[in-house]
Amino acid sequence: MSLLAALAGSSLLCATAVAAAPAGGWGPAPGRVVILVVGDSLSAEYGLRRGSGWVALLEQRLASEKITATVVNASISGDTTSGGRSRLDALLNQHRPTHVVIELGANDALRGLPLQMTQDNLTHMTQAAQRSGARVLLVGMQVPPNYGQDYAERFARMFSLVAKGSKASLVPFFLQGIADSANSPQWFQADRIHPKEEAHPLMLNNVWPELRKLIK
Image (cartoon, rainbow, N blue to C red):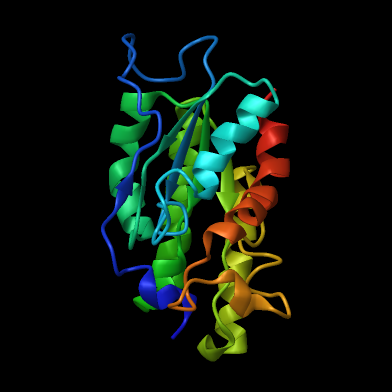
């Protein structure tokens, strides 16, 4: 069973530090740092203790760096890029983020959705967030070898194409050093699909350098 197979197995919504929508309409509020994370089970703490996933660790990292910020985790296990696209406008309007982290696409591959549709959805989300005034970080994924080399390469390249075309920042592979390590089984839960709690600091380390550049 691949990592992707369980991403559709839950409908958990993890909301961290969810704030009421500020008055004044669309766009980030002056003087605030609000980081909106729109992802799937890898960001929604699937199978983990609440507060132990990489998004919760991001809050701790921000505090340790003395960066005052609100983190809104709008990730839902099993979500696709179509689902994220359908939810994004309301999230932007409600939370008025200064930064948006998009971690979606794996479930599109699981469901056999056309790559072009996935790319179009990611492009739409990225550009919609940018139009709202937010800086965007796209978090890339890779599919297992059983999907075929050609598909795997095109899937991985899709994220860089979206980032380049939209001038967004990119984390090429969210699970670098985990899923591609020689001892990868030790990093995964009993289902051998979802990362253990111990892997989430590494996931944050993959995201943090690019996100830190965007927070000035």
